[in-house]
Image (cartoon, rainbow, N blue to C red; front, side, top):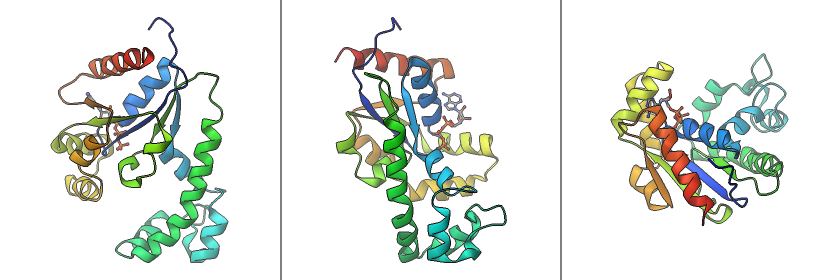
Length: 205
Ligand code: ATP
């Protein structure tokens, strides 16, 4: 790619489940970007010894903490499902911590190193527009999302469809995008080529 670096560009990367975000993020990392994975940061907070565990135990009771010291995800999911007040209590604990962990990780970027924020729920959160220079959406047909996740994770098609229904729609995502990669009928090599092209074009702007 000629070694040309973007001038510290901040890219928000999003897309629905199974759209191909992680694959795109990995390509950006290979091109030299620092990738900040918000799902991984959130997971770490609620893993054994995670920074959010004491606050979750205090707010919801120690029964929400599994024997290994992680948040009991299944139990928490059952609690917050259909109970917005409980969900908000959990989010009030986690969101500021995720924000802090995101800033800490981004601060490790080298001078001029582009940062890619991989945020599955970027469209839903509404606070990202002002925090990044570009929003990139990875898009594909819903049937393709379902097929990919079933194949990758062994989920049932029903489970994937329920998750899809809770996420922003394709149209909502595209409405906030500066660029869209349409990851449909592309080989993985072609998908990487799309990322390379975008990288080259953003480097010159
Ligand atoms: P999730 O939100 O579920 O983490 P994601 O948006 O990060 O998903 P990926 O993990 O990048 O998506 O892709 C989902 C699966 O589909 C992976 O197994 C990936 O290898 C595959 N995949 C994505 N794009 C393509 C493609 N163009 N050709 C073939 N396989 C693909």
